[in-house]
Image 1 (cartoon, one colour):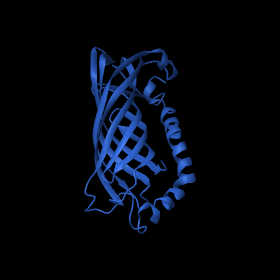
Image 2: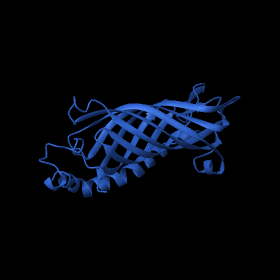
Image 3: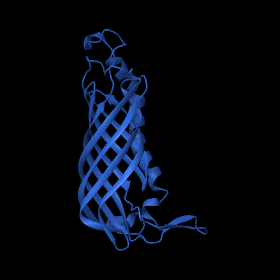
Image 4: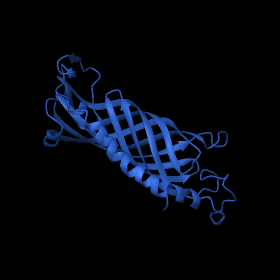
Length: 238
């Protein structure tokens, strides 16, 4: 394959790694969590009060996300904490592909591949982000729909290789450090308050200490993209 970041094996592997632990956790403890948090000894009068009410119990959890960007794919694994009925904090490890808007592509009818004519380098982004999600309209909308805004920032790491290298040869390429940040909007859906399913729409950027020449004769330090993500996860015992 010519394009490192478009190998068809990458995204299925990431999905498997992200979804397997979450699916296992959901099947083993989800029903126990629901029973635990709706009992009277934890200050709940009945099951109509959920964890987003003023009588909430602070909880930790895990979540993951997969999505598409204007330059490729993105996936993340997150540790989350319900800080208040309106606020969730998180620490996130993400993986995504860097790209350049000036990239020129053509289609190879013999191999079925898209080829970038002026591409010089490929870069895999590994940002670590600390952030918060602020719920909106809690007193006006039932908890089955929980819209929010979010913001985050942190360090980022880039794995750089020649455009023609394969995936495993990337780890012999150059490394680049920088900072990342994002802002976004989204919503969680569902009647189970301990389970998270939703979507987010984000603008994310990565800024590096050293410039990277993704396409020929165009070194850049700043890489931004827009992403649409599916989020899934759950809260569990502390």
